[in-house]
Image (cartoon, rainbow, N blue to C red):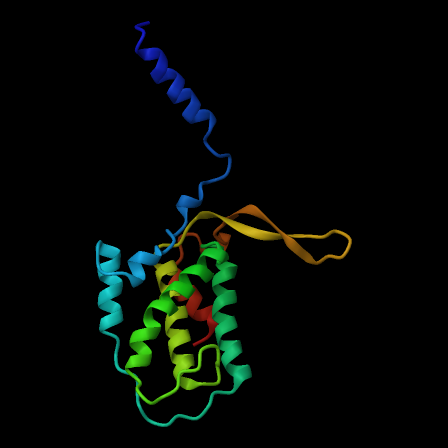
Length: 195
C-alpha cells in the first residue's frame, strides 16, 4: 500500500476504537450558551433570545394577592418531575438552562414593573411566580421541541450503608421513556401535568 494510506487507516481505527459504548451526550438538547442568552446578538440563537427578551408582554401592574406557597411549589414540582420522568434531557442541564433563561429575562421583567417588588425566590409573590413559571416553561418547551432519544445524566452515588447520596456523582446513560417513542411529547406532557 502507498505510504499515505497507513496514517489514514490508523486514524480511522483510532476513531472507531474511541467511540463510546453509550450514545454521546451530544444526542441530547444542546445546552444553552450563556453568551447567547444574555450577551449582545451575535448569532441566530442570541438574536432569537434577544428578540424574546425585548418583546415580552408587559406584566399587569395591578395589585395581586399572594399565591399559596404549597400550591406554587406543587405547580413547579409537577412540571419538573413530569419532564424528568420523560428522560429526554439530563436534569443538571435542565437546571442550568432554566437558571440562564430566568437570569436573562429578570432585568427586563423587573424594569417593566417599576415600584413593584419582585422578591427573588419568593413563590408567594405573584410577580416572581410569573417570571419563574415563564422561565420554567420556556425551558420545558425548548426541550420538548427536540426531545432526545438518548443522553447522559449525572446521578448521585448512594452510600450502600446509609442509603443516602454522598457528594460523588456518576454519569448514567438514560433513554426516552419507551411509551413516548413516536408520540407527541407536548400532548403527553400536557395530559400528565394536568390541564
